[in-house]
Length: 605
Image 1: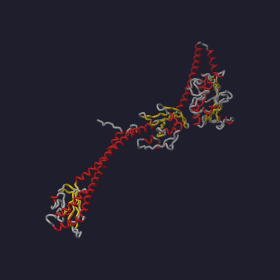
Image 2 (image 1 turned 60 degrees about the horizontal axis):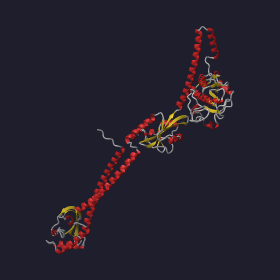
Image 3 (image 1 turned 60 degrees about the vertical axis):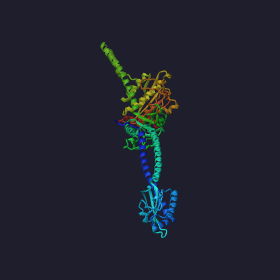
Image 4 (image 1 turned 180 degrees about the horizontal axis):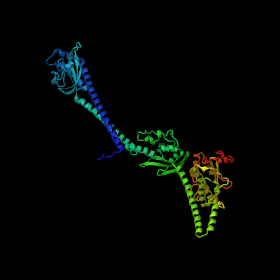
C-alpha cells in the first residue's frame, strides 16, 4: 500500500524534531561523560589533597617515625589514640570516608574499624612506601572507594619514608555526585527538546502559512509548469505581489512593452534555467520589463473578485490588458496582468468591414445588373427588338452600373474605386451622398491596399456617421466629400462631412485610444460595424478607429490629422491623410502635378 502523504510543514516539523533529538543526544552524552569525568577528577583531587595535608602534619610524621622505629607487634596505644583523634577530626571536617595511617611495613595505626588496627592494610602500600603518590579505585575492607595514597617522610631527616597515608571516598558518594550531574543535564536536555519542539511547531505553521500549504514537490512542479505555460502563451504575462511590485514577466510581455531593462527595485532574485525554468519565467537574463503607468494603475484598480479589462496604447501597439487578482484559500497572493496585441486583429476587423461593404455593393450591382438582363430578355421574348436595342443603347451610354458616388470616374485605381463605391453604397442606404471632389487627381496604382482601404474607409465611415448625426439640421440630407491627390508615390486624401463639426474642447482628444464622440442616439447601425460610444458629439470616433488609423499611417511614415473641426464649405469636420509610398507612379505624373500644387507640411498641420 502507498504511504500516506504528509504535508510539507509536518515533514519539516518531524525532520527538525529528529535533528533536535539527535543533537541533544550527542550533546547530552558528551556533557554526561565530561560531567562524570569532572566529578571523578574532583573526587580524586579531594582525596589526594586531604592525604597530602595529613602526610605533612608534624604529629603524624612523628607518630609514624616512632612506630616504624619500634616495629612493635601491637602499635603503641598512645600513638594510636593521638592518630585516631587526628583522622576522626579530619574525616568529620572534610567529608572523606576514611583516613588510614601506617608505618613503613604497612601496619595500620588508624582505621575506622578499631579491630583492624595493628593489621596490614588490605591494598598494596608499595607505591606509597616507595615514595610515590598514587590515586586508584580499589575495593578494600570498607568497600569500593577512590583512594589516594601519599608517603609519610621521617620527622628526623625528612627523606626516609616511614609510612603512608591512605584517604578514601566511597564510590557511592562519587556515583551520587555523577547522578546529580546527569539529572541536571537531563533536565536541561528535556527543556531544550521541549523548546525545540515548540519552535519547530511554530516554524511549521509559519511555513505552511507562507507557502499556502504547498509542498516543495508542488512548488517545483509549479515552477516548471509556470515556465512552460508562460513561454507557451502568445500573450504577455506580468505577475505582481501583494504590494504591487513586479515579480515575473515572460518574453512576450517584454516584446509587447518594447523594453528590456529592469526597473531599480523591481528586480527579483530568480534561479537560472537549470532550476526548473523559474528564471526564464521571470524574464530573459533575469530581467523584468519596465511596467507602464497604465498597467500599474490597472492592477491597482482590479477588483478582488473579478477581472478588469482596458485597452492601452504602447508605442505603435494597441494592447488589451486584463488585470486579475489571485487568491489561494481566501488569501491574496498578488495579481496577474495579461497583455494581448489587438493591433493586427483590429486592423483585420476594419479591413473585413471594408470587404463586407464592398461585397454588399457588388451584390447590389449584381441585383441591378440581373434586373436589366431580365428586362432585355423580356423585350426579346415579346419580339420588341427595337425597344430592346434602344434600352441596351441607353445602358451603354450611361455606363454598365449606376454608382452612388459622384465623379467616381476621376478615380482610376481599382482599389480606391472599390472602397469608394462600397462606402458610397452604405452611405446611400443611410441617406448620405458620397462624392469625389472635381479637383481630385490620383495617378498610379495602390501599393498597399490594406492600409489605404483601412484608413480611408474609416475616415469615410466617421464622416457618414457625422453626416447622419447632423442630418436633422440639414434640409437635403447629409453629404461627404473625398478629395484624392497624389504626389509621386504619396497619396493625399481629405474627407469632409456636413455634420455638426467637432467641439474645440475635444479636438485634442479625438485621436486618443478609448475616446468616443458617438452616442447610441446619434450613431445608427447601417452596416459598417458601428458600436455605441460613451461620449457626446457628432459621431467622429468610436474609441478605436481614429487612433488605429493614425497608428497605421504613422507606422508607414504617414499621418492622419484633423484639418478643421468646422469646415467653412460643408460645415462639418475635415480630416486629412498622407501615406508615403502608397502609389506606384512610374511616369512621374503625380510628381509633376505636385510641383504645381502646395501640399501642407507636417509642421503646417
